[in-house]
Structures are given as structure tokens and as C-alpha cells.
Amino acid sequence: MVERAIRAHHAGGDDPGLWEAFGVAFGGSGVFNKKIKYAISGFKVQLKKGNIMDVKLVIIIVLSIVYGLFELIISLYQNRQKRIVKSGDRKSLWILTIGITLGYWLSFMIGATKIGRIQPWNLFFVMGMVFVFVGFIVRVTSILTLKRHFTYTVTTIANHELIEKGLYKWIRHPGYLGQLMIFVGIAASLSNWLSVLFMIIPVFVGYAYRIKVEEHFMIEQFGQNYVAFQKRTKKLIPRIY
Image (tube, rainbow, N blue to C red; front, side, top):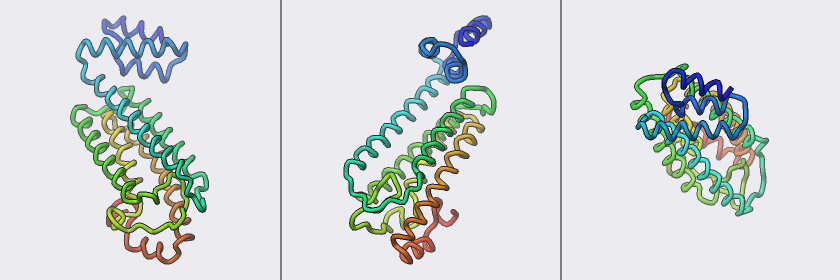
């Protein structure tokens, strides 16, 4: 299937672009080495041609990987602290991870096609990158505000406190808002409305479950203090939601 797709593309008088190679690599069958070979060769050809569209796609993919590494490093550091007193995660981290993974896969798969494509790409690429940048700032700010209280699983630590300063004055989950903005930004930068839709749905379902579990657990731990906190704030968007 890989060879047929590449031959068909050559027959049209053009070289295999990264979009086509990307789609074949994820959707076709055949030897994995050949998929990688075609993807890399297609990228080299497009760079020589100065194809900006394909360069943008590489930027999006690299940015996604770098952000994933950032979260992994923070997670590993946080796990080394071993300060957990009580856990109430209810597999919400696993469900959220599955939702994010599915969102990425669907978003990039449809983004590798012309279905749902929006022109011009420049506008949506810039808009997406702005969302990613702002979302990352919100995410990092929330982590720095929580400091030692930040955990990846729904837990309480020794001498746990309810944080109500910074972004937490207005919303209860700014860290999740930052991540949602990053994921939406990455999907939007593909300039495909279906990519955005397929990213948002599974990711939001994962966060909705996570927030439900977390808030139930926080009420158990802080009682009426957290209930009052809920009344003063919104979940993700100030004064709206």
C-alpha cells in the first residue's frame, strides 16, 4: 500500500510531500522501515523545495513532542517526592491519558488529509501557536502557584492546604485550562476544523471525568471550605464555566 501510494503520487508529476507520507505512515500497511523512509525522504524533498506548509507540520509535531517531554519530566520529579497521604484518583489519570492520546491520533490522522481543511493555513497556524503559548503560560503558572501541592494523581499530601490565590481566585482548575488550550492550539494549527473537533471531544471527556473525581475527593478532604470555594469560582472559564 505504501509503494502504491508513493508511485501514484509520482505518476502525477510531483514528489511525495510530508502530508502524504504522514498519512501513509499512519494509515497504510507494510514494513515500518519503509514508512519511516518515505516520510523522511518526503520531508527532505519538501524542505529543498521550500514548502512552508510541510515545515509548519514539522514544527507542530516537534512542539507536541517537546510539550509531552515537559509533562513527563515534571511527573517524574513529582513522583520522586513521595509525599502522598491519601489517593482518590479512581483511574482518572489513565482515562485522561487515553482521551488525550485518542485526541492526538484522530486530530493528526484527519489533519493528514484534505477533509475539513481550512485556508489560509498561515492564519490558523499563528492562532494555534498563540493558543499553545498562552496555554503553556497558564499551565506553568498554575503549577508554580500550587508548588508542593501539585500532583498528577488525585491525592492529598502531608499538611495539604486549599490554594485560593493567583489564578485560583477565579477558577478551580487553571492547570487543566492551560492543557486544554495547548491541545486546541495544536489542533487548530493544523488548519482543519475536523482536527479541532476530534481533539476536543475525547480530551474534554477525559478532563470532565477527572474534574468530577477531583472535586468529589476535595469535598471529602476539605468539606464546607471547598464547597464555599466552588461557589466563589468556576471550573475552567471565569464567570462562565
